[in-house]
Length: 539
Image 1 (spheres, rainbow, N blue to C red):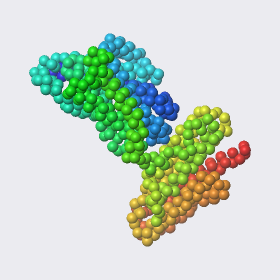
Image 2: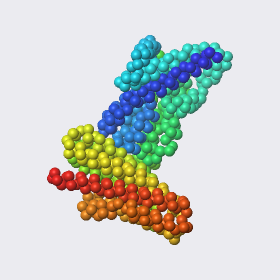
Image 3: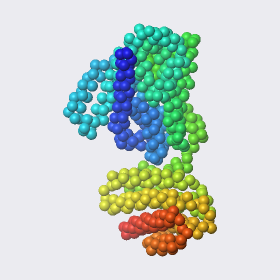
Image 4: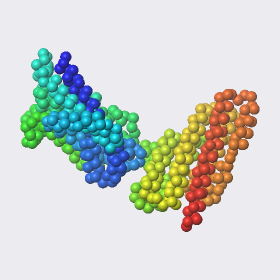
């Protein structure tokens, strides 16, 4: 029983260590890493080097894949820019496997002691030290866990039945391969499974051939886990996930046949190659893992164009992603702040242009050309990207007139966000009456309000995109205070006895939202006129 508890406790420490390393290093590289990522993805070489670094730091190619997906989805980087990074992140994960193959127990014990002293003096509460100490503690626990596994595994060979099982499985490469696949899908990391396999071969519980089969199976398991975790993704997000899957599949497709030929026929292959570099079994396994990652990365990079063409054909960008891509914002524009502000204004006008179409689903006889959900998500994304762009302009410029324009555009951004929220609430409020007969007076009233709102927002769309003075003046006239008019409508409708309490609620909510949307649109127009007047005065 003590043997199994040692192994179980060792696995516990090992997994805690892996989590601590990944979580703390990701915190250390959060904002800095994202900024570096935006810059590095402009070059294939820099993106590849960043992949190596990020894989080594996070020890998770899956984590890099999901970070890449989130940044591409947010419009911060392009798909082509992150592909090399995603590919080479797998090679970066080899670092911990190589370290695990070397006996560094004394160094780990020293690190654990230093970390304990640092925690005693509350250095973990200081922002500059907290995550670094957490990562070092995770590394120490990981290797302590491996030592416990090793200590508990040594007596296993003498346990009745274990020796027979080891003899049975020693010649079953398919079983070892399957074990690698399954364990990796559970652990979500092929590097983690490989490190455990390195520990097992050190104490003689696995043969070299078994361990290689596990390592290859772990690579396939990593690809399958990505496939499972990204089943809900579409478009560009799925494209990046499939790049990671392609890397895994390519490696397995090359290494598995070579390994089987080497073991079956005796042709020199993987084992012969790693033996040239070292005779230490654990180091040989680590080299197999490293060679698998490098081979996968190199071949996938060479086949990148046809692979990406296949992926893009089978997972084209969604409507949301196409609409979310900024037409006017680009990093180089930040070098000229006045021009950059003009580009933000044009991007905001483009986002405002999505608002009238949000009403198409609740308008009589309106042709639904685009999903309201897609427009809503895309509009929100553009607003966030404008916010980020404005923050960068403000950081780089301290001139008072420039900051005044930034503030104006930031206020417009807030209003845009509120407009999307109000339109979403409006659509939700009136959507359930769409199935009722259009002969219903109440339904006709609600549809009339919707048509009026659509006309005003459509006028705003043209006014803001063209910055036409007459259109802006007309818009401000149409969006004057309508509270008295809305109150009159409510009183007239509620005076009719056959209106249900539910319809009363819909009427009150609809007219209130109608007023709010008009007020927000007017405020957006006033800020536009204000900025236009300021520009004319300084021209």
